Length: 440
Image 1 (cartoon, rainbow, N blue to C red):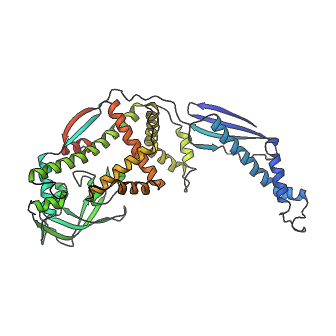
Image 2 (cartoon, rainbow, N blue to C red):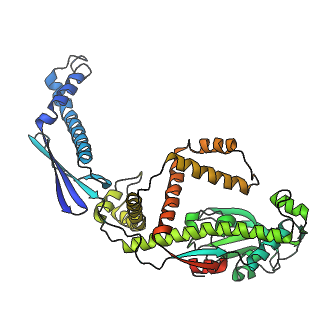
């Protein structure tokens, strides 16, 4: 068999395979012989059918099957031996007029190649690394929320500016149906004003765009996924089921112990310090996420390379349970191109900086994530044995391993970008960070 590569451009090639009779005739003969005792032809007993009749009835199908096996194996080995770094999988060129009886058969496969390119992580940029602080306004607001949460509810006939509402957010098209309790002050002012004067049983329609100061709150109150949070612009109904004011809880040692454990907070000053510490730890995660996204956008914009776009659009039509039309593949490619570009940049950055992910990295990351999650539910001092038991169960699930591995990669790349990209550091309040993040 003769196999060769035909270059079209830097990222598109064709693999041409010329198959001759010797490449498959032995296997075809073996299959025919195996078929003889099993063949059934009218007028002959099973196992007594003449070989020429078996060949006539089954030979063409067997020949095509064996040629396909020979071609598939040769193509796989050729790709490995040439060390081709492919995007997608080879696409066979259609040939409806193939003559299966010809002495030589030619098969052609289109392939898309990963482009060669360089990245400069230290290129001049305008990226900002935000240090987000919890100011007095935020801390005082959190203190008041704690007092309301642990205070005595007082039923109200109609909604007032300081009311707490229990009700259900719904949007049938998006599958949203979540019952929650929320303060009127949690909404932005325009949305909150729509509730004033409403009564139990009333339905209030609001837009998700700018519904809260922080779009991430949509995850808490509407239970939408993180991927859907930013830019979500739909209308949802809120059906009011209960309206309450609150007699604020007293800030005393009993409340502090209930919140943080015995003796860990002993005064209002301690409480505010704890709120500030916890809030800024959470803000740091959000700031890191923004930094990662900003670096991604910068690298995608400033790292130029061609993709085998037309090949990938054709390939997208062939993968997945549902075959896509050319128009649908065009839309899917446009949706996924940016992610594909960064995936390639990410791989180059990891290789260039010799970043590797070990199983120990994965275990440590999972352990830390579990401890953080347990702390949110009040388990602040789990034993190492308890945590490692959970880690073992989590990492026995391949889907979880994949998801967590992606997070480990993101964390390592974030550390790399902080070092190499040298972003400008800027200290801001949370409100200023939200404005910088979402232009609000």
